[in-house]
Length: 207
Ligand code: AMP
Image (cartoon, rainbow, N blue to C red; front, side, top):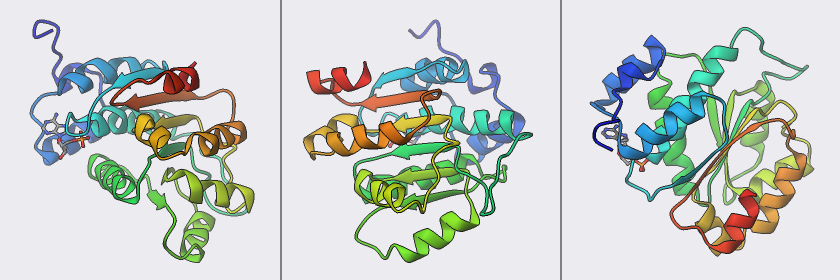
């Protein structure tokens, strides 16, 4: 694997993302980044087996920012603000905040906006921010479903879905919620799926 290791500079990334990687202090891709970024950049679906601490967040954050940059000429908006194009689903608030922070860090030289949606906090500020528009939503399943059902989020423009720590979400009993969320999303989208382990239930979900 050492032989095939790419540098960030060899991955066809845009200057704004390369600068952010440099600012973040990342010198070379971790193995999960080395393996995932080129596949995700081709627009293919991805099933990544990776624990926390392996750099898996940047492994999906970099290609999703690149895709937003590539699409940035054709933004759709409604009477509200910009419609979210990327949805990241994560099991816990802490993880959602960490992912949001990584996306902001790697997107520092872009104009894309990202927000988090999770329970245990007042929903009204989330409604307001969704009304103003955002490019990226990082959400926990329960609160996201509330927003979908109350139509405070329009998911019709989502072209990229990331499911992070899918096995943790299964352990926490979120699988029915995730299936419901999937039923609301456009069928034609790229899905990047990450889990630390691959129990049969997760295998079924990915298929
Ligand atoms: P994660 O597995 O996504 O939780 O990332 C674990 C930590 O590794 C985070 O603090 C990242 O900022 C950091 N990280 C991610 N990619 C790299 C890289 N290529 N080089 C150095 N650190 C990294």
